[in-house]
Image 1 (cartoon, helix red, strand yellow):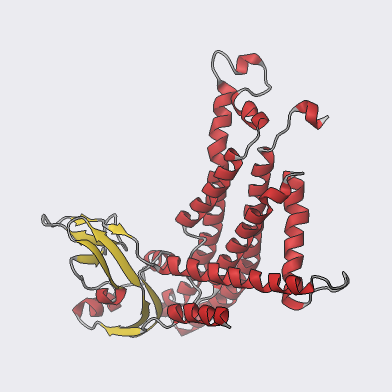
Image 2 (image 1 turned 135 degrees about the vertical axis):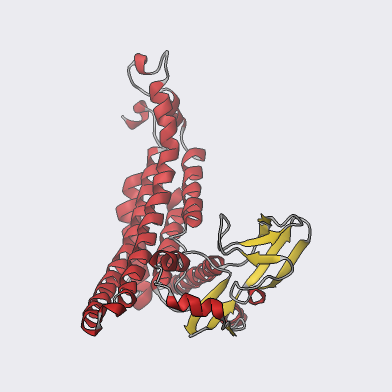
Length: 364
């Protein structure tokens, strides 16, 4: 009972953070209304991170969920306050503001005594950070729910089989383990199975949450290169820390003709570069595919507004086309969400398997 109360408390904490609205009416907005729609800026704003969770807008009234801001200024020290103090990024608070342009655009900056914008130490819970927490909690709840069923089955006949959601999760796990992890890694697959399954479910849950256009979805987590780089670094560490002696021998002294190793270590240099290109490929593949999917959906949606001045008939036809294509791409993105999680797990398993090289006499 206490566990359920704790889970509900955590979920309601994030879902119930004070929803506020703000109205900013003035010459600046009236001029902005006259300008054309900037598709590039709109897409970049939606796929980027934010210090509040934008829900919707009614004219100049923006309904958002403010998130905690935690910063350490170079001169003013630590500050903890709500992002509502920024009034949707239009005002400063305690010397901090959200940069509207420049290299720190969209990030919190501090104005120094000389008038220069400085980037403070920023530990704020942004939209992506909150989504990571929620998706992690959701993943833990789902896995513990399945584990609880198997714990209850202990001591019962073997023909007792799961049903519904638990059977679906078991199907996915067995498919990943039997078709991906075992063939790619070999006899030591059990050692790396927990990590690979965690990566698979973590990526697919965040991919699916990113396809939900309303709270608590919509965050571009796996389309953020910072997130994908951390996942790639984990794989890089596992591959190289737990690699066998034969693996490192093939890196620094591969079995190739001697003139490819001395006097110029050509093959060892190529192998060393390969150590870093593998995780780089993991990082870019996931980041680029998810980001591209979000950008395509937003671009197709913008067609509706870009064709307003072309007449009612043209706008109606392009609106219908935009809606149909957006729904189609969303359905494709559901497939891509699984494929990218599968590919990331498969490539990680392949790289780990390549690091488990055994001496030739052991293979024979």
